[in-house]
Length: 278
Image (tube, rainbow, N blue to C red; front, side, top):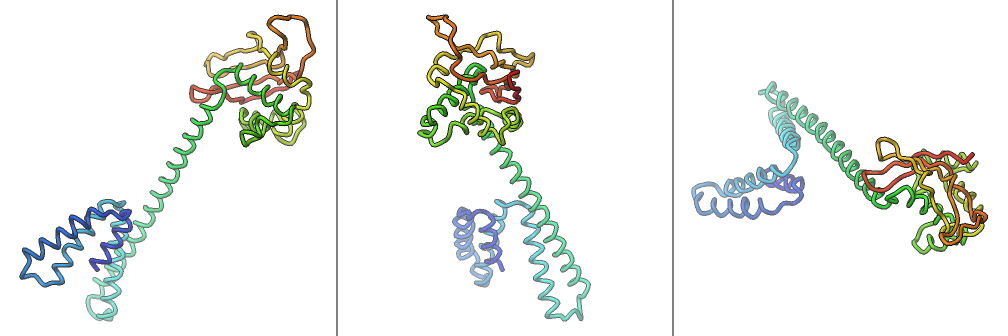
């Protein structure tokens, strides 16, 4: 029983070795040297119990309740078989009921703790993902508009730049949109989803190179809200021209629409709202 308890506790503790080295081997040496009058069975049992108790300090205390309950249940069943409930009936039934209660309570609490740990782990993963996305997103509203234009230009030339990175221009474009903004963008373009709306918009790019190199966002087209983390970019007023030549030229591609942005975790900006140009 002591060996079985030690093995169970060892598995629950994540296979800790120190209790075996110090509690097991050390306890065995002490018992062999000092317990000469003690029966051999107890010389082996005591070190194993020391190991088991030491290992149990590494596990959730509710496992103690489960193990204690299981021991009581087994002891009650053995007693019931040997005594046939003719004597000590109340003690046997009481041990059985208490053991079952301990096993049940311990199992329920272990399940609750496991669910809580799973939730905490998922929250940590979500937080890490949000931080990673925030670092990747463009740091300014102007940079976000330029990123969108680059994806449209890339798609107009076959999407080779995105493909070289193992992705697609549509996926890179829609990465800048929240689910709600992506849905609004798709609806505005009469498309099924954001990638479909992106492809329709990219088809309107007539000169991919100029669409990126001549693009500028007027300062008056960007408005920051009082919270300083939300901004509105009127990307229906994009300008295309040359610093050295102010001759009016035909726009090399489409206007994007009105974009509502929100800074994520103090870093990059995400499109959280979309309205088409009127």
